[in-house]
Amino acid sequence: MSAELAFYLITWAAIVVLFLGLVATMREVRMLRAIVMRNPDGFAAAEPDVVLGGAFADGTSRPIVAAVDSGCPLCRVVVEELASRAPQAVLLTHESPSVWGGVGLEIISDREAWRAISHLSPPLLMHVDGGGAVRRMTLPVRVEELDGWIEKKESLGVVDAQRDS
Image 1 (cartoon, rainbow, N blue to C red):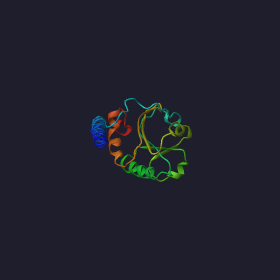
Image 2: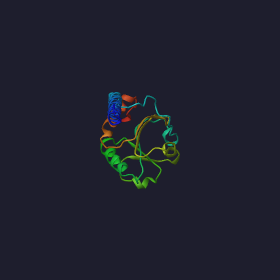
Image 3: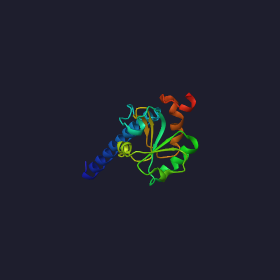
Image 4: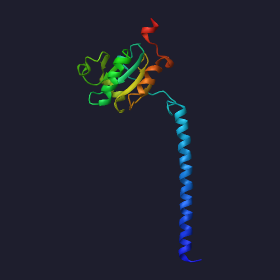
């Protein structure tokens, strides 16, 4: 066998092995995608370990708390959507409430609560219980993600004060 023929055989064998490896990797990615798509919460099996405390530990459950920053364009869109579709929502910010004035939502400016979530990128949507503990959270990247968030508050045991009274 000539050296040239051996080179071609080894090259084609390597190509076949690489192709089979790519096929196996794509199969694993497809299976992982199916698992993630089956559960809309992804791999978040445990509740977040965040306690806002302070103004949020007053015994009042808050179905939707949005942590927002005025320098974030998506935050402004999320606030507009929440104002029109979920007027019971609460805004948490580190800024002066006057920055968000006129949106029609309750605004809480609490630096201690903000410090508990400052490592996350706004906007951040949370369900907060009466003790100030965050029960569920998400970092939306599209406005469409608000649809499921607003509708899921009943399934989490969060009591809506307007419907409960």
